[in-house]
Image (cartoon, rainbow, N blue to C red; front, side, top):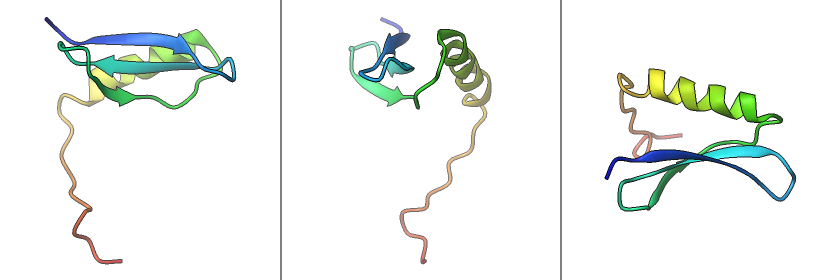
Length: 63
């Protein structure tokens, strides 16, 4: 089964999305958006930009 985006409203009546893997596990969740349309635009941005995104490992970076 393919993954899916779900849009939902949180306790503050803001809209958020979460990305679920095919097995139902949540693998990403968004910030809060003021409107459902803005949440949909956030999903579209992830769909467009994530495919070619590089991985930057900051775990071993010195501060």
